[in-house]
Amino acid sequence: MKAIGITVLKPSGGLQGFAATWRQLEGGSAMVPRLAFGSLRELFSAITEKRLELLRFVAELVELGLLERDVDGHLSAPFDEIVIHGGIRDAA
Image (tube, rainbow, N blue to C red; front, side, top):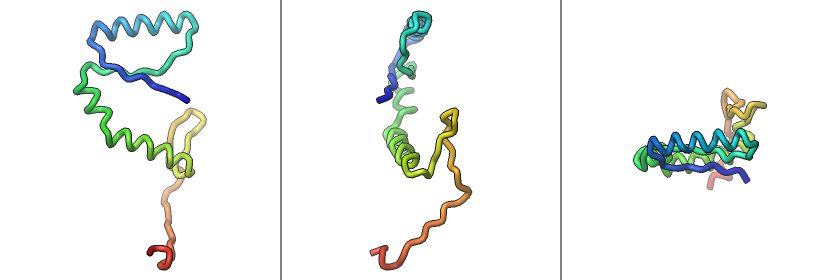
């Protein structure tokens, strides 16, 4: 399972975190991706409940084939239109 760390750092903590990451990379250590925010307000304005819900839906759309990833990992919708047909009997 892949993971990402999300933290709140003061500017001095950001510089220390950068230096620690640099040392880990130089040492060949495996890195966990991280996002850092300057305050809880910034974090909660960027990572809202709706946006977390959207991430779950995106994963499901990839599994259904409605979104796909290219060789670089970029997401795209491979269709210009999606046509949905449904019978009247199935609607009830």
